[in-house]
Image 1: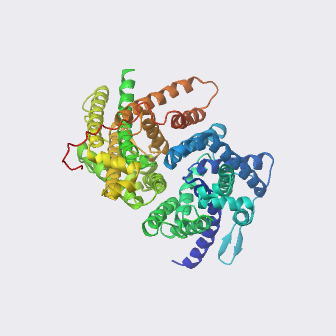
Image 2: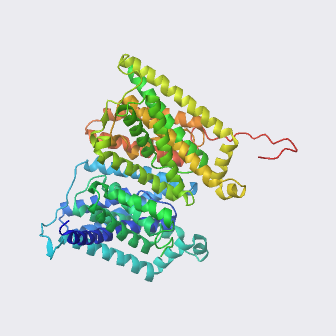
Length: 291
Length: 307
């Protein structure tokens, strides 16, 4: 195939950008898992909520993408805290799996609230039209670069928060050992609230970043959820650096699969990756350890 | 009106099969299946394709559906058997999405999003449509009775006791010498097989299947049916299925009367009501209407080994 090396280089670039963007909701999912110990499937609907919150401020008040992303974070994060308090927290004593079922039901409800208000139509963000940048054989869109920068800033913020702030350290302590943390006087409920705010906020940012490239509808969050799970499981469920490594792996694998697979099967790549990792290295690439 | 009631009773029977299948893993063995619609879809496609394209009798199509769905279930259970239940939740949810992807894209096999129409049904075309509906309802009800009978036997047997032991604490079951992995894989495969048969029946009844039929909402319907009826209780699963069909139909009528709503809004309202009622039941009455009653175990006579 002529130019196939160029083609692969282009896919690698696209994969790295897609993986970096995917890392944002994956961190959200894995952080909530690390602290609350259940797979919170409602990251799907919170990603959608974030995407629509960003859409509203972007198209109504013409906020630029980077500012609208902040709105996506705040609205999805606040929704995450409220929904956890009202819906999921009361279910937690019944066990992780019952809570997971509740999270699926919650996702269906929230998705349909969005559908009720906005309908099923595809909606696009109001963005300036810009020409792709060309470097030799490689092309990259300015929007891709902007998404990449936003995703990297969001991730850096998470790492600085977890590494250097008192609250971030408390969060890691709860993730490591809830009982020990409570003996040290850490308020687990407060940490849970903050984790929900941050985690669902990141899911919202992820939903919006994924929508900036294409368009959004009530199923936006659900469509990427398989890739988000795959990123978290491949990197090691509950590990934040793992989610980043996993997301880059999945992003690259999804893009490179285009060499031999129909584009429709991109999301199936994540599922295959989950099966492979669980069979060969069940703790994930970096192991199940929260940071 | 009569036809409508017969049709709803048939759908309730199909949901009862799904709820019974889910009860075997979730109620008895405590394993989650959040992608049960995937096994349902696999069964529907296998039976539709073998009977329509392959020309085999419907009964054989059902057996093929059971077998293929059971194998898929066994693989999913095997991969996650040694891990926490969370992984099974993630992998089953992923499985159902991949099934829908394959059904939408392998057009040579599944006819893609257009779906497969003209799936044969028992005696369809040879009797009047009304008679077909009644015949199908009787067949479906007999199948529900048969599966209910088998699963009640399982529940009361030592086998069922092991599954409950695994649900309550799989380490204790392992220490007691039970081969936990084998029990988990077998239970999950059998359950997936029942789900597959339900899917096959769905196709033969409605004569048409397409990827859009097999959405995650079906999984929520079935979890709602089982939770409302009583997790762990097979009779509860059947009761719950009938209640869910009744509830879904009731919301259809009630939302139809609401003024000023478009069809998309009505659909959204109904779907959120389903999700909301599951959340309310999980919160208010998690044991369901017919809570699980553990079979009474007679203490063995002195001198006989406890099995």
